[in-house]
Image (cartoon, rainbow, N blue to C red; front, side, top):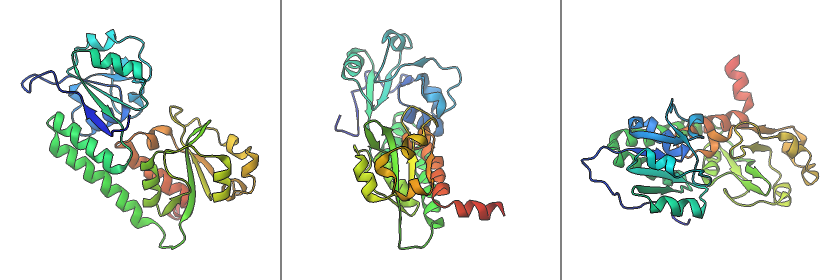
Length: 272
């Protein structure tokens, strides 16, 4: 899907109360952050990792949906999905009598646009703008704390190990805020030779849908990486998937986690 997000025409009028089923943890985290959680009537099973969804019905997602009837029973006026999409699942969603919002942000600017869109849909535009400013302020605060060095630390952030895929483009932006530099473009397939040639000083694993269960041992066992500084200096670390791969408020904590890994000496000073 090449677009960042699109909304299939709403099949309700503005006087009707909006009922949202969110199949996207990012959308759920945004809706809860802007105070629109009352509009939620159902969420994907992954949403509890990033938002207080309490006892809301837990459903599948746009890749795997066992029963579309579960969504229909909730009588939503809007269903929100996000990548990865399975064509068959989306086709079935589009057949149903509700609007469908497909989200696919790539950059922080896209994420801000999605926040504003959800704010407009739920009549929380002011809160949405506040969230955009809060996230931007948090990232700039981190940027101000970075070392004033012309030498930017080379970093490799990985979203999946087989095939190797670098973390999304917005993570590349967060790395820049932290005063470092991604050795490859975000969201692309990467070869082990590419990583070896770039010699990252830090490797961050945030494997999709694994929480914090990514395994650094796999990186240390890659023969092609034996001379990589991050391997030699034992600087392969895990950041929970939700903090880097959820394009919404969790990125604030994700950026902070990146900064702490890049500048461990700052943490030592804070403790002292």
